[in-house]
Length: 602
Ligand SMILES: [Mn+2]
Image 1 (cartoon, rainbow, N blue to C red):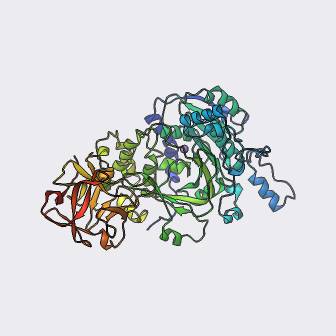
Image 2 (image 1 turned 30 degrees about the vertical axis):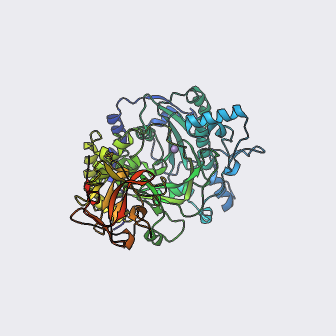
Image 3 (image 1 turned 45 degrees about the horizontal axis):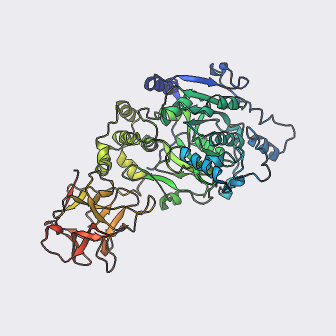
């Protein structure tokens, strides 16, 4: 079955130990973490807030913003009252830049241009522009029209803590995230915002930030006293959260109208659902809000264990009865999701052996599905995220994170990953005993089940011994089949060349399949070597269920590779494409240059 019947994971005798689990885990794994500072507005969050409270028999009174029920209030007035955000959004100044998510391009003199350029260099985001856009700007409506009509049972929805970890984030992007949460989240649903400073060293994030935040309701700031990385910083935030639901956001986001209710409603309905908003793009240079109300994309991955986006598959379309039903997604992008706090703890929260960021999103995704939960995207919840020009700080630990994910969750399928990432096999990844014990304790399903049931669209390479790796001709043993796709988003169209073997897998990894294809399948979608009409070189096309004639090759016993359609053989040519060597089709001979073999590693 694709999904399991509704279960309550933490009721009964589990309850006690479970609620302690997260803290214990934190204490164990990050014994040196201390909260250098925890403050909150005393009227809202006195120290007594930490003391045990009596169980609430009735829904907790809504905060000041929600107001008390009024006698003779109409249904519409009641709804308006319940929807009231923590703070109302101030009206825009006349001529305000970037209002309604419009793109901005500043007319600047040389000095201004220099400052703008510097800010991009520093943050990989146009912070010079961001600083000139209101922290309270409104966004365009970019949700499905049906979302606007959805009615929510505000008094019975669970409340959430929003956890935002940051490291050296710019002032305006961080504060715009905070205000956007306060100005779009119904007061009655937002317990608090917890900002976790992961040991930033920039001055504006010290006293100036504390002073600014201390004037805001429901905002708490905690600081790590050494660099912890995203995973442990988020857990620090989670450990002091008082809301029933944890909602994780990145620190340069803007929330769309109505973003929070769908997440909370879905988790209320299904406690083991981990729900992501649709992530709309905010342009790093113009701050244009590029959301769209059409079908969102869902998350996948390729065999390098790189996260990918793709369209909702046919089967999932059919399962859903409405355009605004949740969409099941094999993986999540990582930064933005909501989860029941107790369920998050039950699932083992995060792998605290992971450093900084990268890879943790796939690990969590595999774990959610394999251990009985579900990972979903709610089409009515939209959150904008500034995707920086490039990653602003090092992701050198992402490889070790991916290896941990592979070692704990992927069973024998981890070999498919290692074949394509030779250096991953040698990467030290630390101790995973606890995570393996967690997997056993929760009786999680295996990776084969995940592939078959959750991500059947992903092609699983055969990797038959002797038929994958570097493809080399006897005549030029220093040179390997090599393919560079046109871009990160475009796989097909370029020519296959021969290049000095680097032994790293990746773009020199090929597989010869039992269906007679030469596949380039480190990435999704996969590409297959093809010969265009009249051409003598190899071009990469998409692969097909039934390989077309121009993609069929017979790898013969004698090492020759025979192209069925042209009846010619692949030959390594030293001077083929712009002076580069390449495999070309030639009349079959006994030449060493027409004898090929696969080599798994250098
Ligand atoms: Mn981000």
